[in-house]
Length: 180
Image (cartoon, rainbow, N blue to C red):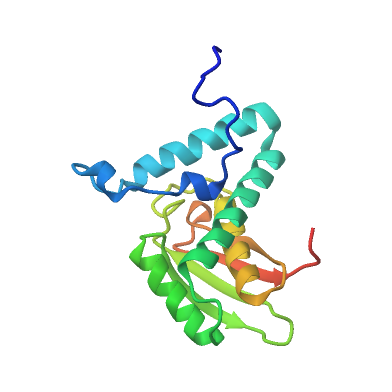
């Protein structure tokens, strides 16, 4: 590929750089796009990563990317200095406003830090046929990143129920882990 003189000596771009957005740049189309377009991106990437690196590596990459996004989301879009009930309420509102999904907290064990939560109407899998496995690896990282930023502890989230396994919500078990 021919070298681009405008890119020579440039800095390494970060997630923050890519998320700078000029609201006037999509005057005709606006900022929203259909879930099908999001899934086209997500699942074509998933297939390509599986083909090149295998399924376990694809899952790891999606979880790590989700974690980065969750950390950014929490730092930039949420108030991290509030009681848990208020934080959850704000998170629920923001997720619904941005059409990420409808969040419900099922159980919180304050002693262990374990949280069971579910997300319905999510962009990843709501409406998919039964595929026989959970598919929301990006969301696992996203939830872990948000909870980690809020709590100051390293959280992981594992999807235990999914639309793609026949459930009507994605259910996650979130736990405090030793940092990786």
